[in-house]
Length: 146
Image 1 (cartoon, rainbow, N blue to C red):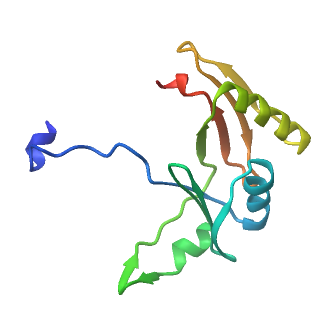
Image 2 (spheres, rainbow, N blue to C red; image 1 turned 45 degrees about the vertical axis):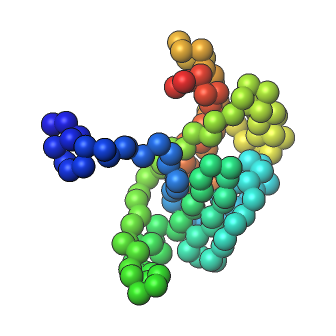
């Protein structure tokens, strides 16, 4: 099926992911990881529900799944659909090789073990670790995909 069959032939698909979401039970531990180790700046926090981080292009949202699956939130008279997941998620941050090397050092200084290091056939490089919630966190050079 072509995309033209779904309506306007001038349709353009999205080009950027605006939000990425990870779920964690212990938002304080996750916050310490993302703020102190990764270096992200907290944008919004609601204890026991979420921590949001604004990045140059998009947002990283950390939610407590038990809260977002059970509590309806209303914004301007409209409900945000309930959501949540179980198990570990995955997120890859784009970094240049110098930043990747610096991140490797930061992780080591924080006592966070690298789970894997990969040199991809495309020329990209990735390092992987786990956040406090068990999510797989990757720091990849863009050559992995571009």
